[in-house]
Image (cartoon, rainbow, N blue to C red; front, side, top):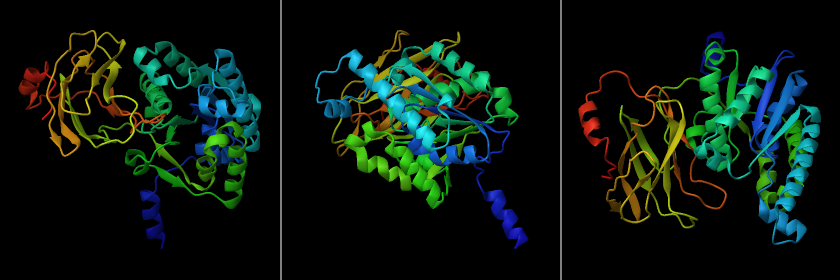
Length: 387
């Protein structure tokens, strides 16, 4: 029995174990994410006597449909949205009180709601510095961040930003175990997250408190009541983020491989009933001078030419091949503008209203050892191909 217990202990994925010396820092993209995904964790931190700090990155002020219904007003001005953001702040503070967290533990950054992906792609260095300052000032033992696999664009974009901050400013402490970093998912059912995450069992009492916290977000319950209340009974899950040397694919990206000068991405685009725009592939990272860069490639829904859009003379075209109604093939994307010593991030955007098909993928730095395909990679560096 003792041997079996030890074996089970070795196989278990650790979850946060708080003490009175713990310092928990939670980054929430919007007011309500703390209740939907982290209620149980926050309750346990409070019971253990841990110090808790919650950072709301946006005010959730650009969610127009509930506001239109509640206020019976079609045209929403900037003043209307600021008022809505203040209301959502009030709801978040009420939810924190239910969870036992003092309102003084909350901080609101008021970054643009529904626009964190645009901020990421347009250059977010000032936001990265702001996030780094918050983490350094608070000095957390445990850090909760959105998952890169979350299908809400704000969530996954914030995950990329915080990943950059942690790898570039806190790699030492993370390597020595001084900060335990955990990711959580609110939206989507990504295998890239759920196959790795640990399910946190909760008591009936904890679930009841979580339900009361969710009910504090009355503006969001107006149009999404059934979906929001269902979170009360859904087990919370956390994935402990460690240094990983491989990428877990997700969504329509079935494989990805980084060579010194190019990135090979295999796609299978199944038909999508409702899309608001043509699919696009984003590649994001730091260039050789250390500046943030993002290139965008439009991926047509039907066989046609493909073009890379960036100021670095990467334009190239190719034809697609289809199986039935689905596009299946391989893209070889030149990434020579990016530093080979840094990770790059890839996302296939296929939006349906607020949500994407999948989040971002993190691609580790390029292999420094000689690669048998290097010569062919050099030849292909100027091409974008689909096979």
